[in-house]
Length: 389
Image (tube, rainbow, N blue to C red; front, side, top):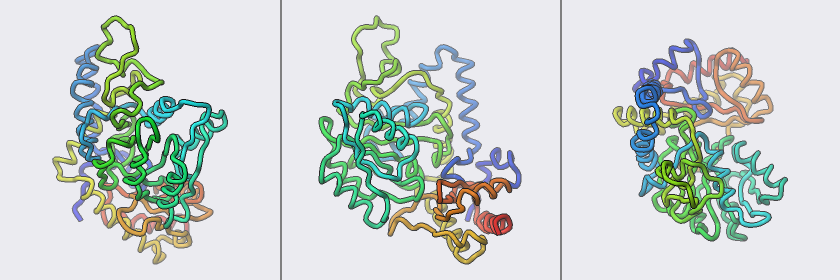
């Protein structure tokens, strides 16, 4: 197995001896991201007031092409960027709202940015949730689709891959069949599939919203969130900022105008440095011949080695946990999910020893990235056995 640690020399040198298995939570940044970060600063220094002309004229179009290539979208212009997916989430939901209570079909496995906001919206009478449990895993996709068939929701919101367990939703094409501008809106959170596994949304891009970003497997960090907005869905977003009409900033302000592409969902000023980083990382991956299929296969091999060593007792008490296998076939998430009542305690003890994982409730997550080699797996297991017993 070829080593790619040289692509991460800065991050690895910053904490010698750290054993980092949390790429699914906070991916270590490759050196390319540093170069992108510096390029953003240099542009701001040289261009000053004119930097936004370059950002909208060169930086964002390049990022649109990078994301569209990854997701197999026909038109990169359907993509908009901002600081985080929560901002787009709020904008999409407020635009769809048309009555006292929207019917929202979702799951009990969504990340906190949606789970918390949706719960608060429900308290206020803005939405009414129908929540499909993720477990039992084997029937999840069919149960979600059955709920959509029973009553088409105003919005169906769910993750492509669930952040706690790695469960994958496999009914995207059927669910997309319900999507239409004057009916159901389908919103997929791709944060645990984007650049973690090969994704092809070409057949459904005209009927679904897609949310994701650079913080995890794209290795670009914060401030590189994107929204793919299908044509005709929400032509005049309710919550809108001046970036949605950036080209008319010097004109006399009158009617609230919107473009027809993804820029209609833009808000206002944000830090574009993350988009520079995203482009720099994508350029480096292409130069190295590393696409998502290659990186995913490499990480899958490390994941299976880790699973076998844990099962054999090489990681000590981690063997006592239930190793979740939510997907019967197809690509898996880029982390192992171990269910045990002591998950958060284990995570804290490992963290104190500079062995980095993370935990969500009773699930310890062990994640995999391009900066790991085959010898890192036994090193992790030996450390876990030493620290946890």
